[in-house]
Image (cartoon, rainbow, N blue to C red; front, side, top):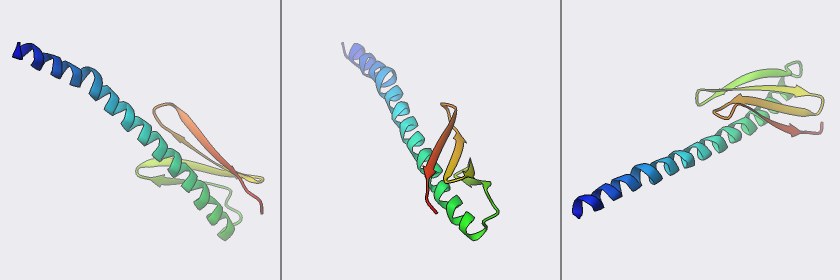
Length: 94
């Protein structure tokens, strides 16, 4: 009986809790990357005020590449994650 209870507990850990933990970790990681993309948008706008000719570039944050570009009144940052290429844009007024 004790062996069966032990096997059930181990099965629960591997079948439910570990996948749930990985799913939560991926969600946090995706939100963190989106936050870094928005930070890149802010830094890109700050850089474009200092150097108006620079309209595109790349930042590396936590080993991840964030490519940004400023078009008319919009700054967009694209990055790649497990889902694919993601893009975050912000409209700004001069």
